[in-house]
Image (cartoon, rainbow, N blue to C red; front, side, top):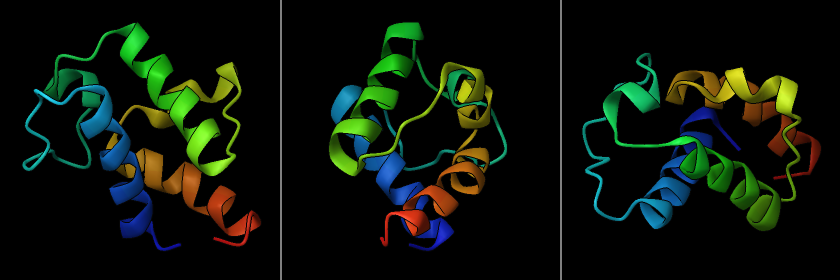
Length: 85
């Protein structure tokens, strides 16, 4: 999976979790929580959906790696590759 595909996977999850949010203009280098109305429960939902949909475990210590769309791609792309995706 490429970094762009990884970003799209994250965006797909966000679209399902927060359907009222406009995700079309998200900036990759700005914290997601600064661009959208995501609370801590929404964030946990994202982590849970990564596990449910893609079998990717994100330890709590690594949560800061999911702050921006770019950092999500950096952190998750190798994890997708390890799963053969």
